[in-house]
Amino acid sequence: MPVPLIIDTDTAQDDCVALLAGLLDPAADLRAITMVAGNVGFAQQVRNAFLTLNVAGRLGHVPVHTGCARPLVRPWVSAENVHGDGAGGLSVDHAGYAPDPEHAVDALVRMAAEHPGELSIVAIGPLTNIAAAAAKDPGFPGNVKALYVMGGSNNGRGNITAAAEYNFYVDPEAAKAVFAAGFAVTVVPWHPLTLRDAVFGPPLLADIAAIGTPLAEFFTRVCAATLEFDRGVGIHGTTHPDSLTAAVLLHPGLVRRSGRYNVDIETAGELTRGYSAMSWGVHGLAANATVIEEVDPDGFADYIRGLLSTPTTPDRPVSGPDGPLWAG
Ligand code: BDR
Ligand code: CA
Image 1 (cartoon, helix red, strand yellow):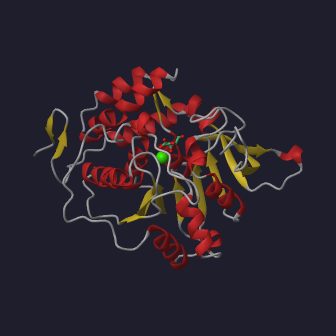
Image 2 (cartoon, helix red, strand yellow; image 1 turned 90 degrees about the vertical axis):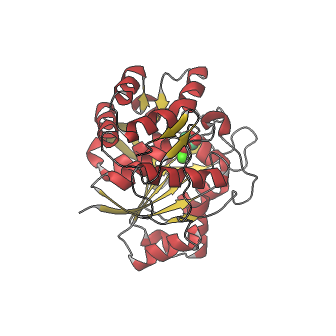
Image 3 (tube, protein in one colour; image 1 turned 120 degrees about the vertical axis):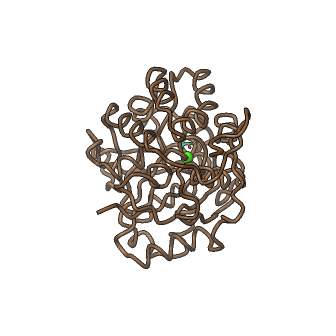
């Protein structure tokens, strides 16, 4: 049976790939896309989500709900220096396909309550919507079957600061609340997991570019800005933490090792805002999350390559910096 899920996303670069997993993997039954403030400007993120639906040939198949347009208590922090517009300069006229009028937080609460214990959530942006939904309905964490979170580092390096990964840094109060709320949480961290097992280097990127489908070209273009940024910070390829998070929910066989941890987020530190303390058994704290420690990197790469090989017909032509694409 396909996994019923919602993807909560700050759609740019790898978030788009995670959406493709939800839209096209037969193991997934994507019920909604909920949007949260993160990577790039909020309106651009919404455009990127519709662009992704369009390239998958799925405009109108899945509702898009806009959610919290800023973190709970702090100003928004952009990652446009990493992702550009998050879409490689591509755009589509999605007139006639507007976001659903229901706020993302209301949609999350409602859909989880309608199917208690059935829906999983893949949260691949700051945790603002998820924390707000738990505050709005204390029954929400118990109604969600599994919450898969991309965020933090397992006592390792951050990416926006030495201590913090971007999603937890942007809204540390939300992340802290989520780990205290009683969800069945699984975490896909940035370091060491993503940097070891989910970086696509030049040979794999060349293989993908040669696939020749609209999805493979979309991937190459959407990931170009991040690839350039990564080169400058010593990462030899594109990073795929968000699509890995969707992949391990849909295909748990990709996971080679995981551990139970007590995860808590620093909100008060002078240098450590958003740091994720992942305490293992010796610290005497009750575990509140499963942290993925190792995945099968080749299996994950094959999974994404397979996804991007799916032949799709984009619903509408896409505009690119060098002219129209897939104009039929
Ligand atoms: C996370 O931050 C964002 O820039 C990516 O989309 C990913 O969710 C990695 O730190
Ligand atoms: Ca993201």
